[in-house]
Image 1 (cartoon, rainbow, N blue to C red):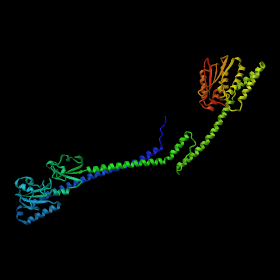
Image 2 (image 1 turned 120 degrees about the horizontal axis):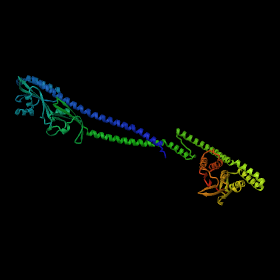
Image 3 (image 1 turned 45 degrees about the vertical axis):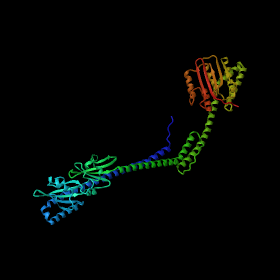
Image 4 (image 1 turned 180 degrees about the vertical axis):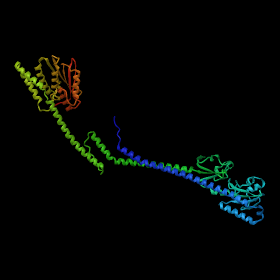
Length: 566
């Protein structure tokens, strides 16, 4: 299963990008939160400040005029005022003093019970005075019903200021418990509106019957100058007619009036949304710039790492000729130089090890070739000793065959011989064994002519025949040894078969385990030596295979690559 490899360049790009963008996003979020908090605080503060200022103005103005009306009513003697100009002058002085102290232009009137004007700063009577002469209605009617205390109310403006109402404060003049006249202060709606009007905050003054005597914008009013129900909720944000507002309210004068402050935030919200969109756009542009810049810088700075990775990958694949040329005047240049020195040293070491390994293999092969079984030599000499007495001619042939075997085994020629050469040596060995066992041993050689010039290691088949003779005659009186050589799928197969005593399963398993082990600890040195020599020379794909079954003898196959000797 292949393991996923993470590239340092991607990790660096990802890390730098994340750590570059995170502070920007955090700062942007903080800036947005602070801006929103500032905007929200500013909206609330301006709204509440305007509300409190309007409430203070209305409360102070009405309360002062109520007190002033009460004071003037207590000072007036209607009989004296009619005939005494000095008394009138003193009342005028008091009235101007009070109005000037409040600071809002105010009309003042003193009427007798017949609504005749005795004192005023206006040249004509107000509208409510005309109505009071014919009906006990309006402010005069209210004063008559509450003659012991000053009152206030609102009436349609006598100055024709749209639908706004003038503020009227009045008190009955009492003499011996009877009403002898009236003191009235009229604050024009224009004066109140001029003090309340603000381009950012709209003020609405509502009485307990939902009428709007004072309003800086008629938009909040409905029929009969009543306030629209949609605007009468409590403090907070709300929407009406696709416009967003923030509203606050406050009751004054013991709940007689309620003052509302409305701030339209639709335009501000649009500006805020536009600012957020601009901020997001800037963030996207900055983020893309950072990503592109980081990618470019990382690729530039990690170019040397790519070269190192490519070089080490080449070494991993066996290419030791790829050198590095890094001129960065930093640590990568030192690594590149160290890599080049390592590569040179590695090639030298591999060359040395290769030569040593080759020498070791050759030495081991020579050693394996030189191992000649002393039992065979001893038995052959014993047979020759007896044959000299019984059959000198046969003894002479055995001596010649033995000398050929010994000369062949100790020759210093190359280990590679032709099949024909090795079979001549093998046939000499079989002849000696046949002299020893007589008619009990026979052999058959099947060697195609086209394979006789194939190159094989020498002394290859003799150990196999020796084992067959050594172990095959235990329960067998006559043995046939067959040697067959053929080519199967570009592989040279030498098959040695005997019909002697078969190998039991346990011994067969032990021999097979011995053939694949790195060292031989069994007594079967002949088979192991042949297999070891073949694998040292040609690799693990070749070697010795053995099989056997009861009644069929033993089959040994030697697998070799095909090399033809010229």
